Image (cartoon, rainbow over all chains, first blue to last red; front, side):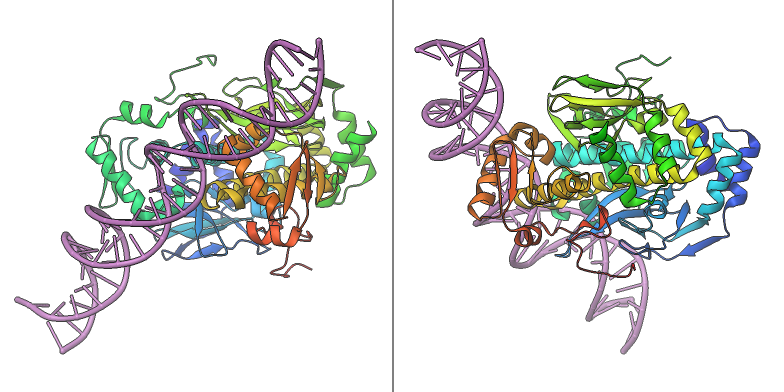
Length: 249
Length: 249
DNA sequence: CGGCAAGTTGAACCGCCTCAATGACGGTGG
DNA sequence: CCACCGTCATTGAGGCGGTTCAACTTGCCG
């Protein structure tokens, strides 16, 4: 339990200072953790009666399939992330989740989760806050797809993932394990795997980032952030990438 | 008050059967409504201390600006929609809202909203449900930007807006007022206004949709839905566009 | 009638896609 | 130990969708 609780606990405590008993309540709530093989689809779009999970280890992806066989990845989930909370509220899932690597998840019984929010409103606020951040990430991704070039989009994603991973203690913002192949990356970026390959080459040749053997190394974080027009306000108010609008003490 | 309450009430009661007193509580909660001119930006990205509103009349847009001057519209808000709920949770807004037409909004005091959720859990569930649907709309928009052509994307948006408007009693799914010019539409679709123009011409020539003088007329809903690969499960479980997976009685 | 915003059209360009191979690596079985 | 295979990465050539730049038109309002 050490690793995992750290991921979720670390994340929540960054948004909302929680008491020990609140964190413990959340930890006790979880059902026994389950292992799943890579590529397992564990939440299905358009199916009702879905459940919510916390990702404890490994990587997962949230995506929608298209009728012609295409796919759009909406977001990557890393340890500490909730998955499927919305599908419980809407009673049917609006997108699917699948394991990217072998993963460990634990289910959250949503009825009991809501009960414990009543008893501990601050816990509820922290969880809502985390869910809101995940939504903000999706919105930023939407902006990438709509208005950024392939190069900027890729750079943006790699910066974002570094920061998210750092926040839960899995690598640093500029060097982290990234077990996602170029096909998956293409589905996330709205590109072809072929073009992703060329973009990665360009980023490497410009000595900005290297992605090789499932490992990302950011060589020049400042130039990369400039290229991507990265502004991490949506992730974390205190990020190193925030330069403007210091209106928050 | 008649019109507005109808919009929000109609919407909520589609997701969640509410008692009269629950609806009344929500209505009483609202602060006096305020008018704003078109183009007024009333929620600013990256500013803290934001408030939440219900849109009562007119159209608004949620968007993010890019450093170079570009803009990406994340979603259009129509009467009955919440705006800025997330900015309250995150303490700082992650995107801006502006009036597209002259609008009428009423503020929701969020502290009191949360209180009344405690007293009436079903009301809270209904509001969360509506918020989740808005998130699902954003996700579908992301898929459009990532994996649909300009033609499909445009068709998809026009179908979606028709259904959303019909649900709140503002026009029908195939004919409705759409006070959005081609520049705004371009910013929503991740295109150039010039290309939007050509796309609209194509849709018109194929006798699928006409958008003229701020009015949308869908001539051939079936062909349009087929072109867009539209599947409205994310909007409403009982929509006319749902053909597959009848696993929900 | 003049002025401005929005819509419309053309021509040239380019970012990304498509199709088609080839290369690198690890695993597996003969 | 090597031949074979599957998966993923890489590269080239050509084409298309959407952009850019630059008019021109239409409609509205003063």
